[in-house]
Length: 381
Image 1 (cartoon, one colour):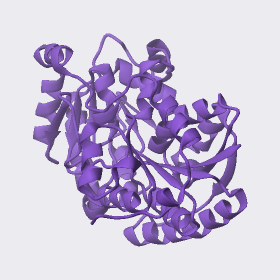
Image 2: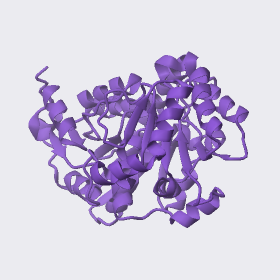
Image 3: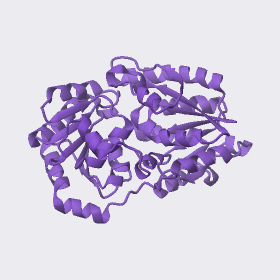
Image 4: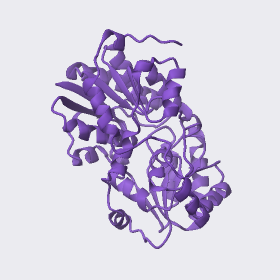
């Protein structure tokens, strides 16, 4: 039996690996080990580990790592704590593969540990561009990973340009789209009922995270965004940011803008989040889900700031700066009948998905031979 260790430290990563774990469960030749850390274990952010367990998955290990303070220094130290913890866990589990996803620091630390322990690494959504520190992290993981699982032809080509050997690169698609295309998310009426939403009025889904390099400006940036949304008095579901440096300032701003038409969720389960996207009229903020998942619903996304700078995006995305007037104008454009009609005609998802991405990933993990050629990387650059 081949053992697959999966690391998840945030809601976004869990969305990546959830359908993969479902596929692993169907395969008697594979066994999964979910290693949960960081945001999942923090009660002030909603203890999203409970969502993993509600889905019927077993969490093999919990690694507490997040130091209080939420500054750039505490982020760096927290990653050091995680590196020590993941090394002990991998020693005990002795997995045949470590499956990583995305561009978070915990994923990089797991890659560092696994590579030094001679454990093969597969990386979901390798080769993409991300803004800020996440982009550097993603490409650093690429250098440690042995198998690259690309979600678009653009990403696969970038991996080749980085000097990664062609046999390592697999164009599989984005696994987080499987749940949306099958579909297996909350019914629209259930999502609306949970947040007391009126289907007859426009619905705004707001997800805004801090940018590490700009964490000193997080309060001002969030203030501009929330001032724009508040001025329109639209029913809004605002979801807590992740716990990167600057998140406290964003949460404080959310507390100041507690209007009756704004509902705040500390943590929204993946199926409910997808249900909200299916009923929302516009998504506002800087979450990657506005670029990756939202096109599945023809959902306009007003992308604020540089967090997703350079990332592949579809016709649903409207990019704006941290300016309340620009944000307000973009929201009005997104809600217009002309833009809705335009999306119905032209909004294709640039990230590949057909509902079977996770199956392809699992078949690769099951069948790939762990040879000397795979483990000893020959970097062209």
